[in-house]
Image (cartoon, rainbow, N blue to C red; front, side, top):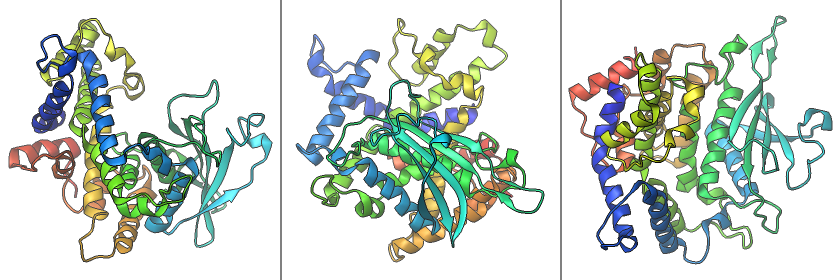
Length: 417
């Protein structure tokens, strides 16, 4: 709780700036014409501001034109090759192994791929990405078979599935056009899949994402950074009609849109994490759930409405069970990992930075799955003790970090050896 409270205090100045921007955008919708912002205004005003930003950078052309699903899958192949020297191989599948064989048309097909390095198959991934009626709405990665050491000495290859539901807004190539949010979702879930496939543990219950919840979201958050990395985007994001590479000003626009309300997004996750902790505490049975959430929002400067049960939409409260703080933990740690391992210096070639960062990540983190204690994994994969500098820099906040702050962070993450 102390860690979440510290991060909330650090984010608060930027949060107030973002809320002020939204209130300014809402002036024309108030009876007085003065800046006001109610809970029901936030989503509308945010969409309004984001549309203005999008129009400023993209004009009449929508950025989704550069993100056909096939191009985005090519982007994933590109990342695996540049970062891990891994090849992606298309694998033919039999109808009996697919869970949607009758609907496996060109619009809703399930694709099977293998990840390979130096001619060795590391594992298999099913890609079920197209929307269809009755399909799970939430994106997810499922472990179908974990990797493990077999009695005769060979290694059981892991098998996982990445499931999304991208609408069939078809281009002439029969490939859905993704929003940038869709692209982040695809890379996020694929980050989980890569973690599952690249780990090599002796026991299946310690394979891949089967590690303490504190760390499970790190690879997925880390993969999202590739969706705004110019060196990656320039190599795969091409216009679905013309084949033109995404222009530099469009990439700048995506980066701006990605960070425009970063404090608002992070603050929301902090509030959900605090609610999760409160509802699984000793006081849970004596507290009013909705009232508790409204008080948390009020404490953190977020407009709320007494007549709306927003907390009931927080489904992770049941699946995480006092562990949703880990989602915020992972964002902080992924930011630090990205800045330490994948940014590099101006004199270093981008290809070398990505390759070296990928090697360190695989060797010191991904391959262990849950077979090492979190504090030991962090002690090797991070170059400095866990800190808030990376995440605050991304949000646009000065990275002042005193000894008291660091003690709170050290207590939250443990002190790496």
